[in-house]
Every structure is written in C-alpha cells, then in structure tokens.
Amino acid sequence: MASTDVELNTTATESSKTAPEAGYNTSARTPVGPPPNYFRIDFLLRLLLLASAVSALVVLVTSKQTKLFATGLTGPFAFVERDAKFNYSPAFIYLLVALAVTCLYSIITILSSCALMSKPAPAAKILFTLILTDTLMVGILSSATGTAGAIAYVGLKGNSHTNWNKICNNYGKFCRHIGSSTGVSLFASIILVVLVLVSAHSLSKRSYH
Image (tube, rainbow, N blue to C red):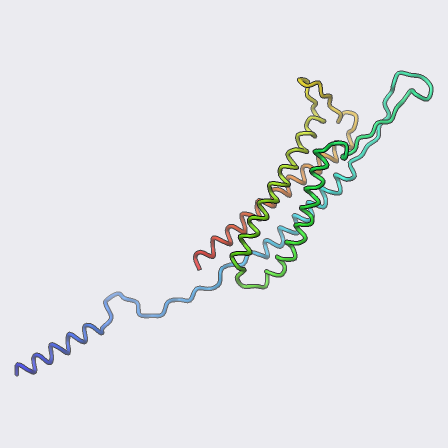
C-alpha cells in the first residue's frame, strides 16, 4: 500500500513538471513582416527636387538685363549701356554651381530610388548613406541660397551704412529673376531636409523588426 502511494506521488510530480505553467502562451510567435519601404515617397520627392533645381538654375542663368543711363553729356555720349548679369557676382556663381550639383545628384538618386522601390526591405547601409549624402547636399545648397539671398537683399534695399546703393529700382527684371531663383532654391533645400527625415524614419523602423 505504501509503495502504491509513492508511485502515485512520483507520477503527480512528473506531471506537474511537464505541464505548462498557468498563463504561459504556448502558441507560436506571430511572424513579423519586413520593415516598411518608403522609397515611393522618396522617389516622388527626388523628382520634385530635380524639377525645382532645374527651374532655379534656368531662371538664374537667364537673369540678365541691359539699361541705358544718362551721362549728362551731349551727342553720342549722352547715354551709356550698363549690364546686370548673374556672373558678375561670386555669390550667384556659387548658387549656380550648387544648383548644378543638386541636379546631378538628384538624377543619380532618382535612379537608385527607382531600383529600390521594388525591394521589400532596403539595406540599412543604403539608408544611412542616403542620410549622409542628403545632409551634405542640404549644407551645400542652403549655404549657397543664403549667400545669394544676402546679396539679393542688398540689391533690393541697399545699405546706407556702407554706402551700397540698391539696384533693383533700375534692374527690376534682373532682380525678379534672382529673387525667384533664390526662392526656388530655398524650396529645394527644404525638400532635401524632408528626404533626410524620411530616410531617418525608415532606418528607425528597422530597429523594431
């Protein structure tokens, strides 16, 4: 009788060891899907970047105006021609180079975005590289835009402290071209910032998968 009780206690102990604990989920873990792919948004933003950079570049290159100014003399020397061109200012040449680099960069990255749209999960190395290069382009384009904008403001308002006269009262068309190009360049810089945020968000989502 005693041996039978021992066998029953041993069986109960083994059963309790093999039985699942209360509240423990024995079902298989739900599989996690691939991280989200934001390269469709990236592709559209880079198309918009290319369009804005090309527009700003064309408007800047065509910024030229010729005016006749009275000299106070008589005869053939009564008037003299004066030109206003973008290449007369190093700041505008800097903006021209920055916009040309942005156009080339946007074409290259558009092709890469087009290739990565079909992939379910782009590599983290690609996203990190895009963040670095986009940030570099933000620095280049925004600095050129700020420099050109400062010169354009002096041309519009002048500076009485340094005796720099405003010229936009005489070269209205030229100043409108410069202002439009600077404004569109600023818009392109904002697009680059948004691209950095999109890539950073996509990279952060990978840490949860």
